[in-house]
Each structure stands twice: as C-alpha cells, then as structure tokens.
Image 1: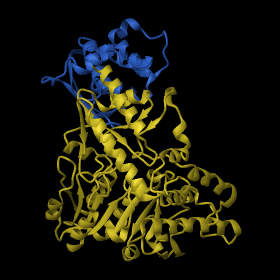
Image 2 (image 1 turned 180 degrees about the horizontal axis):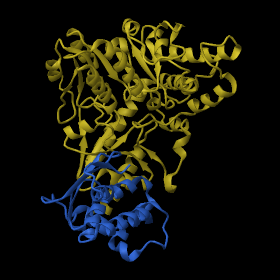
Image 3 (image 1 turned 45 degrees about the vertical axis):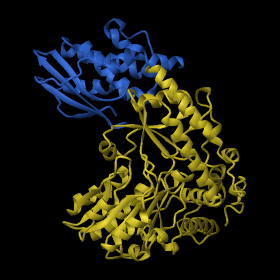
Image 4 (image 1 turned 30 degrees about the vertical axis):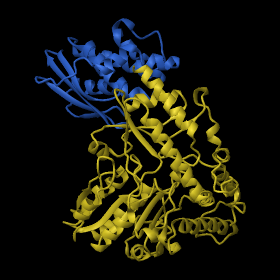
Length: 151
Length: 423
C-alpha cells in the first residue's frame, strides 16, 4: 500500500471501523439526529443525552465505511463528559484537520486520538465520510432534530 | 456529410475479420494512457460514463472553428451548415435505433431529460387519479423519481414489479401487476447495477395487450446491444450520448410518431413554435415542439460521430469481446475469498457488482484507486434496488469496448491489497 493509504487506513481506524465503541441505541437520549451521506447513501444516527449542558452520554448506530464508522466511534469516546461548547470547539478542530492543509496550529493535545483521522485530508473524496457523524453531532447540540447531510 | 467526410475511421480497428483487436481499439481512446499515481489506468467505470474515441474528440472543436451558427433560423451559409450537421445527426440516431421515421427522434439532455419529457407531456396528458405507472425493482433513480413526481401531481399510483434474488425480472409477476389501470410501463433495458438484460419484447407484448404504453431506459444498453425499436415494439426509448462514447449533455428520446404528435409540448420557447402572437401560439410539429431553445449543437455533432463509431464496429465481434470479458471477470472475482457477486442473471451485460466480507465498498474503491483501478462504489442511483437486496452499497466494475483481461487482473490484484489492509 502507498504511504498516504497507510496514513488513511491506520490500524486504529480499521479496529474502530470493525468494532465501533458506543455503537448502540440510547434509550434516554435527549437529542437524536440522523446523518446521511447522499454520495453513498450511508446513514447513521447519533444519540446525545444532555445533562446541564454537558454530554452525559453519547452513542450512535448505522452502517458505513471504515472511515465513517471509525470517525463516529472516536467521536463518541472523545466527547463523553464534555461540555457542549467544548464539543463544538472540537468539531471545529476536527473539521479543520480534515479539510485544511496540515499545519502545526491544530491543538494536538485536544485532538488526542482523533489525530488518527488526519490522513483523510489527503483524500478529498472521503472527507464527507469522516465528517458525517460530526455534522449530526453539531446539529444535535444545536437542538435540531432533523436529517443532516455531510454535503 | 459536411463535417466528417472521413467518418470511416472507426472501421480501422481490425474487427472486419471477426477477431476483436482490443489494442487497436484502445489506441483510439487517448485517455487510456493516463497513469494515475504512476500506475497503468484500469478504467472499469464505463457504466458511469464511457471514455471518448479520438474521432468524437476531434469532431467537437472543428464545429466551433468551421460550422458554428444557430440552427433552423439563419438564411446564411454557416447556419445552413450547422443545420445540416444537426439534422444529419438526427438521421444517424434514427438509423442507430432503427426508428421508422426521422421525426421520431427528439434530442434531449440525456436519458434523464428524455424520461422527464415523457412524464411531463405524455404522462400529464394521459394519467389521472387511479391510473398506474408500472416500473421494476431494478430501476435507476431517473426511471423512478420522474414517475413519482408525476403520480404526486396526478393522483396516479406507482407500482413496482419484483425481481428474483439473482436479479432477474419476474415476468409473471409483472404480468399480474398490469391491468386496465396501467397506462405506462417504464423499464430499463440493461440494469446499471446488476447488468441484467430485460426481455423488453416480451414486456412490450404483455403491456400492449393490456393497452399500456412502454418506455425503455436504454442508457446502459446503447453502448453494448444493437437496438431496434421496431423489433422491441416499445413506444419510447431513451438513451444518453455519454454512456455510448459520445459527449455529456446530449441524449435521444425515440417516440412513436403518432404518440409524439398528440403529446403536448414540453418546454416553451424558441424553435418549438410555428407562430406566436400574444393571443395564441401554434406549436411546431414533432420533434421540434420538444426542442425549445437553441439546442446542444456541438453535443449533437459529437453524438453523431459516436454513433458512426459504434455502427462502424463489427457488432458481433464486439459482443463476443464483451461477453468474454464478463465471463473472465465473473470467474476471476468468484475466486476472491469473501467476495459475493450481486446480479447473476443468465442474460447479463458488462457489469460486475460485488460486495466483500468485512470491507465497505467505499474503502475498496479508495484502495483500488491508488492502484490505478477506477470502479464505482455506492448505491449507483438505485437505492430501492439496493434495499431490496439488503445492501446499502456495492462495488461495481463495468466494461466497455476498450476493456481488457489485464484490467480485470489489476482489479483482482487490487482486491488482494484491500484484503491485506483489512486483514
């Protein structure tokens, strides 16, 4: 495999894609948003349970490629317990990491494990896979119970 | 023919003997020498859009440098040349489809444009509350959504004929769904996902016996099968230039003359009228009443040359070549561990859809891409079909006249790389 393919399909991504964390329905979710990628028809549902402006619990369901499943899985593990504004700030960092040319300005400490997704930026056709769950999350935090698209 | 006195270039490919010289064929397609990421290109996405032979590429630019003017309007030299080229291509399309009259050929923006035209004119005039449009489970969105929109406007119902698990149309069930309320049957000739070739003649006979009209989506059939609308017996046939070695943005609707004549016009504008006053407009005759506005002249010219290209081939040798590749590809893919072919109807054409255990088609597509192998992944604009098959996506390799066994070998080798990455 070429180098950038290796960067894209790091073992962590393949593992999360195959065995996603927090992959279930959340019965007591206070916000539920479906995200669809019209390019491929992939559909996932993000459940968020908010308690005093804090993400008390978060989970997701759906089907998709390794990138979209791993991104959603990593997102849920990164955001559990975070305040809404911290989660939205992280959305911004992840979005920048996925869509902008690599730079040193991104806060690697805050991105943590999510940094394994940075290889996606070399594959513009796949950015929507990685952002799908995050767009659904943002919509959920903004109080919109609707179908969102990663277009 | 004004533009291309040398329209015989397509005969120089060595098929006259009945043996298909694929290397000579490939030399006519300059894009095939592109090397993605330094690897040889294996373009296995011709069902999405075909590549273009040099003859088509070479026809389009000279139109602008030698013949360009508006058609049907000017009295001057260039307008006459442009009109002759435009109407000359209509005659070629008539021949390509074996339509009995040239007035039965309407230029559209593509198959989608053609189907929407029929839905909005024939459909709007003939369908009402309680009437039915019958489609099949294997239709492309472009042969579903226009009918849904029509049904929403008219109160008609959309019915869907089922397929088998292998992707064959269940003709008896289709027959049972056709009744006196069925006004139109809309069916694809060749499935873009499964490759299934549908028994159009049989469907047409069943539909006509019940008084229903038949529209055939020929987008995937036109580059592969000889088309004879009279033998098929269909009432409408739609195709896209870009799937059959021609340019994008141009297509053809064939319609039986008596139907086209009684259909209301489509869009209003120039060229579709005989006379206009503020009180009353008299519409032009078919096909012009369906071609409002200045048409895609250079697209029509390119389509004409693509038709010359296809009709200049030894169609039997081409069919044998494409059949050989499909059989070779089927056998090679079935040897890949964990791979399942989607669409295994006995009558099949040029499409190899598959899924691989544990790997999403998008991931397959990205890894193959870096090996120079171009395939399509996703729902292929046929989400209801994918749902019917219990899938959300497939990987699809599709073949054309320039496809080779070596490209299929590259696909299979690429799938090994996929399995290593996901091992």
